Length: 285
Image (cartoon, rainbow, N blue to C red; front, side, top):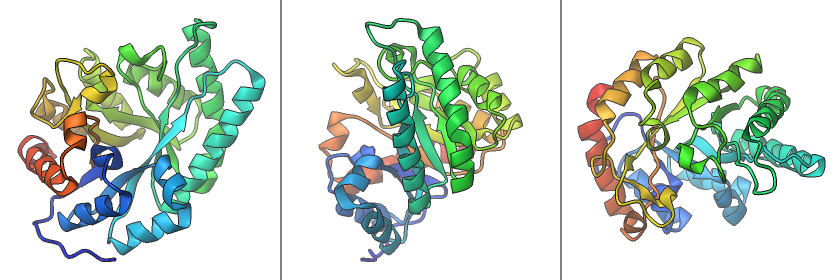
């Protein structure tokens, strides 16, 4: 159903579904719409839970659109059977993104295994698989956003740790449908960040911008240390100026993974996100 808006619109702000992970999907969509936002980032788990057509109807009925779908990827398997299965799953993910109207599919490319520690070979398999998927994405009208992740996730989640590594693969495909996502949690530390973001902009491959903070102490699962902007150590005005200078004009998606945020009612959490965004990000866009 359409939810009446109760607050002032905030330009370009999108809320990623996992920011309110513990909130039922319908309640999340209604809380987002009640804050007069335009977009949400969704996950494939939402598709599994609700069904693809039903989820699209719920988003439409809330007056929202989808800024991204997470996630595709996990393309590092050396076994041919596993590789073929991964490619098939990624084609389904591309189809789901297209059906939801999401312009881009976030690609978490995968890590290595204890049995196969050759990270260089794993990156080569990522490049080969992305090149295989690119024509399918082009046909579907969906872009593939390679997500470099902090080096501490190289073993299990992403053998791409820098924007330059991701851009090397994107450019090697020769496809305009392959680019990168700038996620502050994963790239804020990179001394080449400004030049890499500029490179992404110059090549037309900067497809998404996600923000959240780097909080200490790290959680037992470091992935769950993504906090509200302003609670940690990331310089959001500086990075946002880099992204703006690179020509990015799309949605700015807040993606937080934190137990305390998940324990907060969605309407309250989204309100905090809006306040922090308006203070630390919006003045620079």
